[in-house]
Image 1 (cartoon, each protein chain N blue to C red):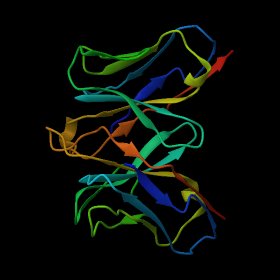
Image 2: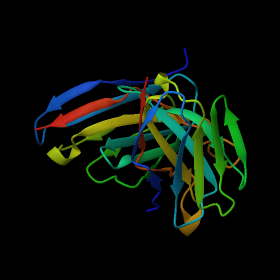
Image 3: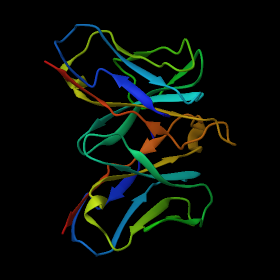
Length: 116
Length: 115
C-alpha cells in the first residue's frame, strides 16, 4: 500500500531533550516536506526537500533540523525542544511534476508532540 | 512569506445543503489545491488547479481557479454527514522568487453537517 508513515504518533517530552520524528514513504517520491498544524493557523511549512541531500527552509524553520540521506526517509529533528513547539506535525511527499515539483502531496497520519 | 486568507472559518449546515468556501491572496498564485482533513488524520487532496479560470469537479465537489489568480473557490453540493472535517486551500506562488518547493496553506474551514 502506497503511504507515508510517521513515528511516533504521540510524544510527550520535556524542554531541552533532543528528539527525532521519523518520516518514510514507499512511493519513490523525490519531494518531501514537514508541516506543523496549530489551531487557527492552518498548516505551516517547516522544511522541504526536493531530492536526496537537497533541503530548504519553509516558513517556520527555527528550532528544527532535517536531513535527507536517502530518498524514502526525511526525519525531523528538534535539538532542544521548547513548549512553543508543542503542535501536530505532518510529513508529506510528492512526485516531481512538469514544473519541477508536484504540489499534489500525500500526507502522513501526523505526530502529536507535547513539550512540557 | 505568502499568506492565504480562507473563509469562512467555520460552517454549521444541515444535511443536503450546498456549501461554499473561498481562499484569497494579495499576490498571484500559479497553483491552487484543496485538501480535506478528517479528525485524527492527515489532509487528503481533493482537487488541484493549475490554470487561471479552470473549473474542476470531483464528484459533488467543484473548485475554481480565480481569473485574477488571487483567489479560489470550493463548492460542495448536497452535503452529507461524511463531509464533516477541515477543508484547507493551499497554493504556490512564484512571486518574489519563491522557490518551487514552498507551499502555503490557508487557515482552514471547519465544516459541521447536522443530519
